Amino acid sequence: MTQSYEQTVKALSPQDILAKWSDVTPLSKVSGIPRSAGSTSSKEDTQLFAGHDEEQIKLMEELCIVLDYNDQPVGSGTKKLCHIMDNINDGLLHRAFSVFLFNEDGKLLLQQRADEKITFANMWTNTCCSHPLCVPQELGVSTGADDVNALENAVQGAKNAAQRKLEHELGIPPQEIPVDIFEFLTRIHYMSPSGDATSKWGEHEIDYILIGKVPNSLTIDANYNEVRDFKWVSQAELEQMFQDSNLVFTPWFKLICQKFLFQWWNKLDNLAQFKDDQIHRMLQ
Image (cartoon, rainbow, N blue to C red):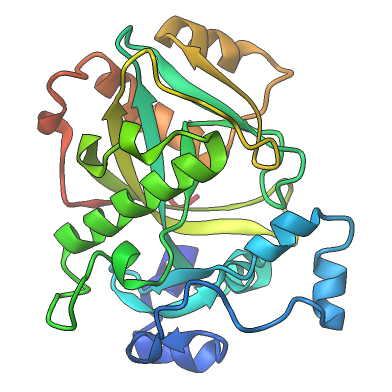
């Protein structure tokens, strides 16, 4: 019997991951520098990045947190390495976060990803979705004595990353989104190609779900290299968007909506009841 994709991922030990992907730097050797020292000028890279935006290509040098099946950090790998579909098909997994910001009227801030994005371009999604970097602050550790495998530390790291990316993508000043406004609810594990099954790029993530409540006066100054459009929507307005065949949504956003979002939306003042330490496996 052919083993399932989940079995493939589960079977990869940290030692297997480091042996299979020599470009992954073991956690014990991570320097704390948040960008790769490598280049994106090889023949392979020229083919992979053909026609893509230069700024987005540079971001592919960022160092993601490579994980095993149990969400334990193994080391650092470039964003490029972690998003190549051939690596994903072999089981390479990394950490991500998804932020959902709600205003005082109970509306959710959505963004449409920019044309320039290498993965999932032009798709509508939740407020902000990105990756903690493999640096102490975004691993949630401050000293060598901190447990990098502790969920509470990983959550703190995801919150720190969320604040950074909300400023980068939407221009929201950090003082308007202190990390303590984020409430961690759960994690999902999913995999998806970016586009059809022939895509060179995709996602395979354990995604930390963060909810934040913000004032209606929240400052937004979108970075249009990251975000094509954004809007605040009610539940009814989002449901109408899902009915519009001209709109395309990111796969992780659809998964979260189908399983969780509308339950949470009705209980924004009492989200603690939904919090868990599980990893919800949503592998297709």
